[in-house]
Length: 381
Image (cartoon, rainbow, N blue to C red):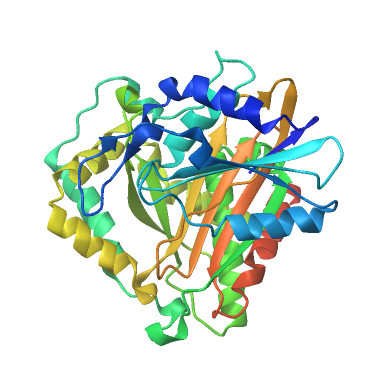
């Protein structure tokens, strides 16, 4: 969700801009035919993908529209993405919502699209591949074995969700929390860690507090299923989900928020290692189709799910015809069966997180508030 400050453009102007930029975004012309396994290209009719909606005044009208649109179906027989232009809810402001199927674009692909369409400075682009892949990297069989063992932890049951699949509804609740990006940046700098460490530590702390209210033990730690980009520099604009998932267990019991943060920085070491990231990439490339299918079935079992926690950042500003983007809120992807999926997106002075939760699990619909409070205690502590 891109929130612009400025008079809303005519839908025709946005359509013309989109049409002019599509040659730079070949992924947006790709789709998978029913039952297909190979991307096909198609002629893109922008009118099928761009919709203008005029709203009545008030933030409630915008919030209601966004709650409805994040659940709207994507095209089934055309490239699976859509763009909505929403205006009328506030004078001098408008919102653009971009949604794309995760099979077509992962977080890096989404960042590439936003930069291509709306970057204020074309020379300042977001990082859409891991910096460690910019030079050749070698991973030994031992490195690959270590990462295979780590990844296999996703097969285990997670006690804090319970062992009964019937307690989950599959109905989704979307909630958002916004914080100053300085809370992440300054906390990371003062503790010698990364912004991602700060985000994950605050999230683990919030989940542990929720679990304590439910009477659930978390002595073994909170398992975070972290999407890891394995996209290489030459794959920036290519279609497909070039990520793998690494489960990381973050301890919270008996730890202060700062101690949890320092522990998290140690646990996330594989994410920062070019060699181990390359091991994950090579392991992912060797998976046979039958095993990928089996892993997806496991991922859709809520009793085996960790907390899905992704994080992307825009490096430069976004704008359209001089109207700057002042806020960006992500829309998290949640596999069927996943009780909790969180996505964080940082843009300039603001950081927004989307929490997608199962409506039947008590208290998860307020987890975004717990995360904000945990992050604030880290930033101000």
